[in-house]
Length: 173
Image (cartoon, rainbow, N blue to C red; front, side, top):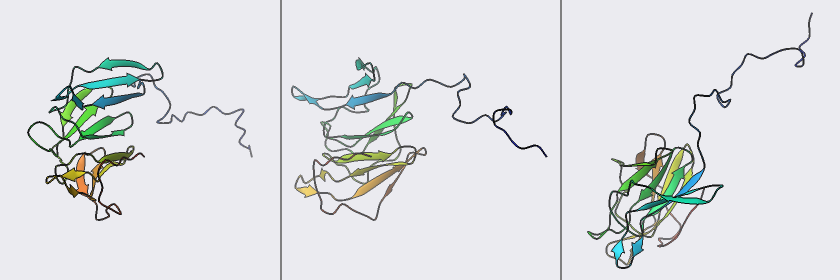
């Protein structure tokens, strides 16, 4: 009987994580989108490429110029910017930046209700969450949590809520 000795055997197994030469190289990056500048809402998107810490401006823009929106990421796949306050009033739109192509699309899924000043966080490759914020009337603070399931980009509303309704919170994950 021959015993297995890893020093004498060559494996023919190829793992999914092992480079094969046909994959697209992903360079880590982050995105800043929307905001308010000198009396006008912004639709532009800036990209920071790390570790070089260089900045570029995407030719693609948000579906509408707005401030008070929130972002989250499905690492290496896509980034999401939701809600906010365009000139026309609060929105429930969710825009997706596809990585590494840096193209923008608008999801058919939307937030449960229009909102601004809320937090976003994600469990990459699984789901992302948006919580809190406020809607119109402005004093109506929210405690609800919306879930975006990756990679289908579908939205559901959790039965769980934040401990207290709040505005201008943030999240990470």
